[in-house]
Length: 425
Image (cartoon, rainbow, N blue to C red; front, side, top):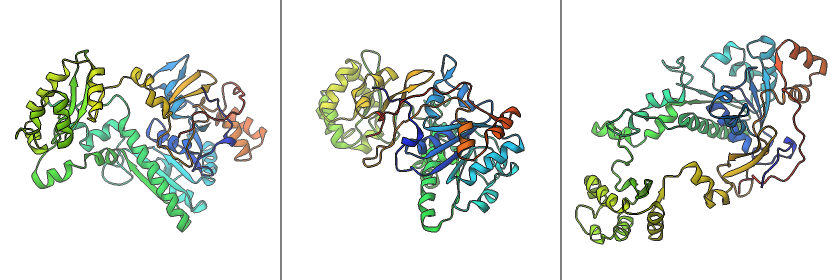
């Protein structure tokens, strides 16, 4: 089944009633706002006339961004030229009516535009400002430009990624941007709770390098206490054996995580070597970590002789955590993804039925939903300026004529309201 784009008045979720202004661009800021939009917040995304850079990232179909269809979903999209003073005044008015503002410009940009927290909070003391940047709002590196991959490099996370005999690779997605957007959203929700007690908002300072560095947690005391510098370990998890990927007879790979002693004994039985569970070199987690090459070699000899389906069947039946390395095709064919609504079909005016990643996490009492795909740049400009700021039709026409704002390229397609099938369970 496919859910059709709905009107925003039919939205539901635990964040219904919160107004969010998204001034960010690319990935971290838009993802932070998308999380809130999925759970009912009224998110107004402000784009420059040329559109968010995400619209030129990733793949496209018939000139439409597939990435934008997802990361801009559930938002109202307005296009305002913030390089012009009149445009900045419009954004200022939007922020005064907001609960949360999200931005990921270089530190100091909002202040130069007259949109800093001091200015906005004078008139809107309950405002929560989420600031996402490469290196934070303070410190000697704060003025540096920074993308997620730069944050990974500085955090040390990139250094421990990949095989030890090769340069550190990247994950083929904007990993650190997503982590940082998630931290920003988490910080905003904590600030909303605090505001309910005090009535006062605050600033959330979410830095890319710090978000990536938070994943280095086990390696920090190891260096301070023992002088150990974390290194790339390939597919293994250092000190946790067996926990790696293993080749199969049909040229696939399977992950096996059997580091605890009881699970390893079950694994040893499945591969036909139950005696390993009593062998002093493999009987304990510490011993296996000290003999990981030999341990992995024994498992590899077994996996190389079987297909990925056979391996999964035998290991899962013995309650040994294992799974093939999924491709996107595997995901689309997997009944678990379907059952938990992690592949949601939404009707898009330009793309037809488009499948989007589902909502995370699943709330039992007030789940989120996908009520709209990411629309075109400026889709809702005229509506927002009219309904939310009270501008007249003549004033909107004047602003459009002076290139201060931009509306939709064509009239939006009308759709009937229907109960969403994309609601998270």
